[in-house]
Image 1 (cartoon, helix red, strand yellow):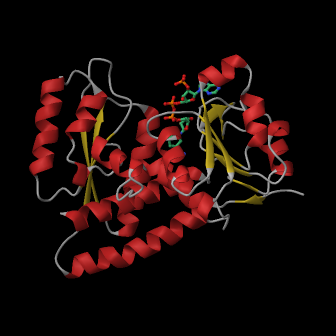
Image 2 (cartoon, rainbow, N blue to C red):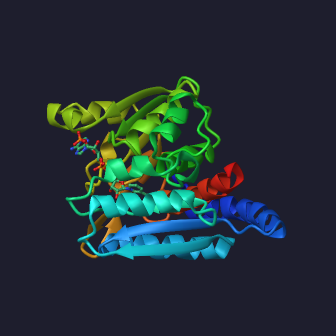
Length: 283
Ligand code: NAP
């Protein structure tokens, strides 16, 4: 039986509708939440994200500002600029667009953003709250994955979860969010892939989350019958956007599956807006 699609777009609309009410309340008090975005250079992928962030912000009532710098900007100039934004009372949320040129230390710059303005939820303080099980402004993609799983109504207690990819912004925080609900969580990475045990872990996953960035890395036949599949990957293949999971085969085995595009992406953007609203409340 074909899996039910987890429609990220619809879930995102619902989250944004709820946010609109809170933003309306702010506006009645003379406050307009403001998300400020910093881009260095002109990466095409990043331009796509910026356009979608701007559209979502404006549709929800959040002011979106973009500061674009040439690639030659120095670390010191970036530090000064971020510190200015930290002090600026008009700015509620800050997002540092990736990729950055090699001469800039992205982690150091991200660490500079005040935790209460960290709209992406990637600062050590916000990551720390995820470890504590109190994710006030958590990493957007991990929070989106959690929302998508929640939308299926599954009880996470004791469930076998397999996560493929252990990045700081997706794999690791997603594992922590699920551990907190007493799921039994395995996190796979390049070592698992190279050892050849990836299919084994995938076959065990009653919930499978894949965040790697390699098209069709996960073969559909590895997917456990009845599994919930969340595909975070974004890959361009012959002009089409696809995920990391072999969708056509996987959907015949899974009970729920996210489409790519239209699954994790829209909910990640909704989480960015949610963090901006939380940031505004905290200030
Ligand atoms: P990342 O930092 O590059 O992490 C990729 C992870 O995959 C790493 O942990 C890597 O392990 C692991 N990996 C690589 N090859 C593997 C293999 N053969 N077997 C098992 N694991 C392997 O990427 P990311 O930022 O987490 O993003 C992952 C994907 O999600 C990308 O396609 C990105 O575009 C997409 N993404 C989508 C959204 C959205 O909103 N839809 C948001 C964020 C990211 P090592 O580190 O050990 O090499």
